[in-house]
Image 1 (cartoon, rainbow, N blue to C red):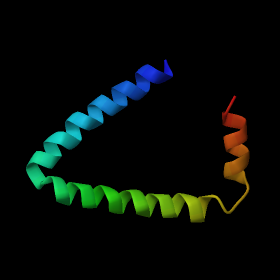
Image 2 (cartoon, rainbow, N blue to C red):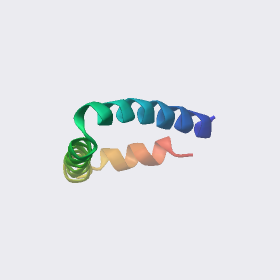
Image 3 (tube, helix red, strand yellow):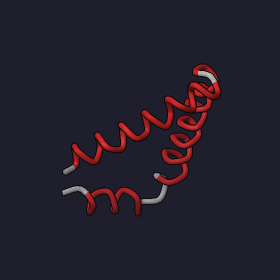
Image 4 (cartoon, helix red, strand yellow):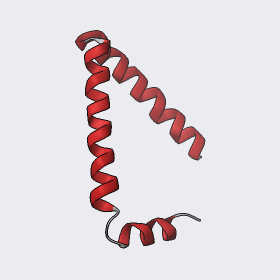
Length: 63
């Protein structure tokens, strides 16, 4: 079930991002994606991982 959900999400995002790349240009879309990834990674790693509750939640959520 997990693999098929991943494949569905990947295929749908590939179609959406491919059409956006045709509209806006590949380089611009790549730069936007890198900026969003870096900003969200910085937010998640530095802001949310400071308190102990995300680590506890991650331990409970993983089997």
